[in-house]
Length: 363
View 1: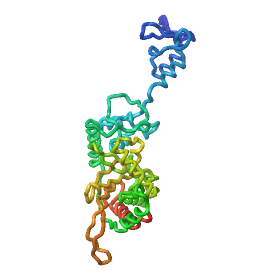
View 2 (view 1 turned 90 degrees about the horizontal axis):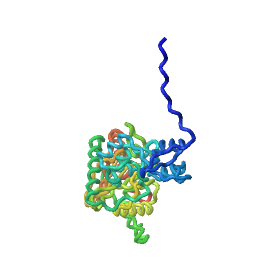
View 3 (view 1 turned 60 degrees about the vertical axis):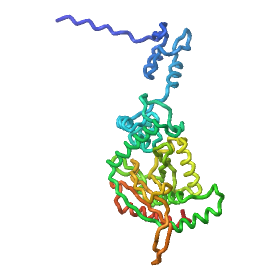
């Protein structure tokens, strides 16, 4: 029989004795096999460490300290990374809502719609949690351009992918106006309630009554939200817009809602909103009454399925019980996602808004 080939020499396993790692300065750093294995698993370069053990030996503590000193990495799904590059959003600044806090495409879309995320930068993912830092100051020309680009990308996609339907109704605001006048006479100037607060509260309560419009369209199905988190569109002085969230808006008493509204609008326009305050909205309201328009038909902010619009409160001829007079009225509009609901549901929502505004004392 032919002679057997000699077995290949197998290198011996590392012994407990120290092995050496090359130091960039030309010397050597001693490190045991367990420490080397830990460094390899943690992605730490032994040559970059200053050993604190006897004779400059690198210890387990040195490796663990180097690992802890590095910024935490943020997991980003491939789709989210592509979408972030397209919308000009830096995924490293986002708080992921996916498994193991991974940043998902919905997180990127939410950040782009709010305009609060930093423009994308060519840096590896791995910065601190965005909620720990305030957003930047009012946008400079460069940031405003990036924000405009992000808004354009998101709204173009929303208009293309979401089959919108639109409804509107005109609401008699006579009872609401009288209630506001009487209420504001009885409180200090700083605690007065503006008509916008009544409109927001009515929109929130109606969303609670019609939950089919309060939630998100994800994974080809609608998921109703367990609370009414009202996004409020705020135009920024430097251009663009942001939509801070009033959480549990349906449960806020009017004075508290008014105070929260003033607070988020002020901080939005001075660049002091936190990333956590522009996420998780379940339905958004845009009110352009202060700009003089009579109605607004907006584009839905995905993954939400509805956007409510209010114009200015204006005096118009109005018939009540066969008698014609002049009454303050407002046009309320609804942009809704036809994948989630049909017109009958949208009509029910606007009817609820109108009914609630007829009884402001119950808001």
